Length: 355
Image (cartoon, rainbow, N blue to C red; front, side, top):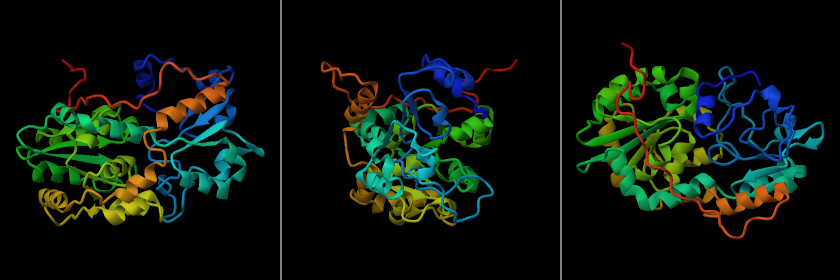
């Protein structure tokens, strides 16, 4: 694969991983390969386990690429052309989060059903496991003196919150004063990768100068969602997970152009508050919190996973099955809480300073 994504090698090496050129990878032999995409997996010399990235395998979003005709539905994530090549089902296993996804697979690619495993959602399980630590996350995010914590989230798309309504961040700086609100922003990692850290921080320099914070792309959004009093977002997975946890959600208008009819995000839009460009942001946030009912998004949570708190167990079982090994009996897998966040509070936090 010729595409280069800024920051990927640094991230992998930061975890102690080894980065190999793609052409070297396809010449080697592995016992198992883990993938979050179907791209080029037929070339990988190993059994390939494909897992979803974001909420579920059946995507809520139309094609993100510029130039695609509005209303043209993108591949769902389980379409036959992704799973089958030269008459052969390529993945050795496909991890699904919900029984409804297995029903979808039976419709579109029945020959892949024996390779599917409904394991639930590991990310959601960790979010739930993190709820008892909400106060610690709020403290780490700088929530003091009774301030309201607002998480602003944007995925990557020309219809996302940042892509479709970039002026909103100037409104946040002006209309959510730091003496009453603690605002932290989580941007999709591809925004950082495509534009670079310096550019992202520069775009949000005034927002940071106003006393708000930015979360690094590697970690932090999950803790912020657990800690949040309200979330302002778009059709990205962060917004969906926040709603599933019962957090009041306000959604932007532009991202409706990206949403697949009948999808999980479309359901969320029907249930969430709409971000109104004509009303002060602080008033909208306060109104959303005041009007919120605990079971408002119960339907969203029910569609995220049909195996709550079971993902760690079921994913490990699937992996050991592919490896043809017995699972260890002495240690049960656990979905633990997420790490404490480390927010960026100045545009040059962590950047090398020129003389």
